[in-house]
Length: 527
Image 1 (spheres, rainbow, N blue to C red):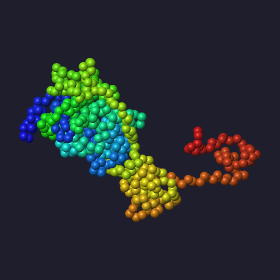
Image 2 (image 1 turned 120 degrees about the horizontal axis):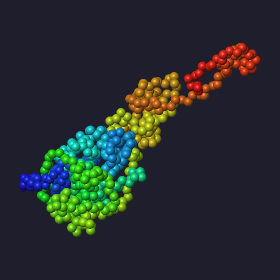
Image 3 (image 1 turned 135 degrees about the horizontal axis):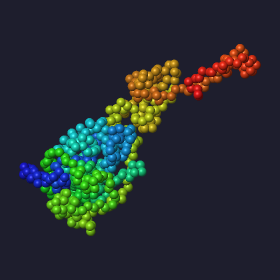
Image 4 (image 1 turned 30 degrees about the vertical axis):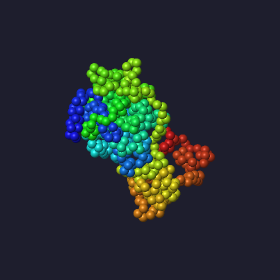
């Protein structure tokens, strides 16, 4: 029985093999993995931003294992900040919590935030990409190979509809409590309202969200989930020529899937791989867009509509996504409608209140685990930000992250000793006497004097260069010079030193005229 099913899958897959520019799609039952419909499901394809599903999966896995928290503050590197759009323009050194980062990435598909998450989870991008590929192999994603965490086009980065359906199943099964990350209709960052790039969110009843993707080489991709009548389906569309086409096609596939009971007799895991390398469909996309590449984030709130021939089997060539069944818009339960123009339409988006997101840490960030790219850096013992100013002779609590207001970074809410801090019971004093102050080495830590408990703190506990933050004692104002008048001062010397002779004496004893003697100019004198 197993052999016959596998043989049927091979035959089914071979029949659907088409040219590189043909679309690829898949619909499965999320609970059983049963395949309801498939078209070139094992064909290698460039994933574009559907890559971010794996980035989110690894981040949530790190949370589950306690390596990160949703309130962990992750700093952005220069590499992350330099990523191309679509992005939210986070600056190098700015922090964002994992919670806000995941929501921004999955709703807006921000490339810079995907790198922030990757570095926060893996320490650096190279290590994170290795984690992505290891996880793909563990999940059975045989057609997938990742090169970066955001899906920016690389010829070696590829996946398949089959693999993305497997990844979607893993996200839904392992992290059901985090579904709002990929189902939020919109977020508000400052004054900007960022709508979900998934056109089904807010339009298709029962939609569970998930992720879109677009680069010119891949066309418009989407992984979408929806629930109806107690059943949850996953639909994958890769290679549509516009955002509207992928949205309407995904809705059509979901409608058809909900109209079926049972499947093709095999599961998504048994679908065969077609092998080879993902091909670019950029020429087709540019022709559709009038010679220019389109964008993935240009979805309006109104209805979306495409010609019926563009998504179904009504065209002479069978359409981009050839389907054997009747068009879904004929079904009474379909949410699609046929317009008088012949186009297939999906209604406008429902109005929603955007979820507020922001950069920066929260009060709960103090107790969250440290991000991997902070824990591995040299200054991980001290909270990032401006160095504190230490007043001379003032006692300084050495618990740098005191939550009760005694530490240098108390306003940041850190807890003593939780992140390599000096114990809160230890105190140190900055030297106040210039003669007894111990000089610091060049670029080295500040040397302290005072009561330091042996073994509890050391000079290395302070950030290098912290001496620059110590203010010297204010010096008393200089006393005016007291100069005794001299009755024997010569006129020549009076000219050189005007304050050393009385004006009356200089006027009473005129001397023969001599060439004037110019006083020597000091370096700071005006010319």
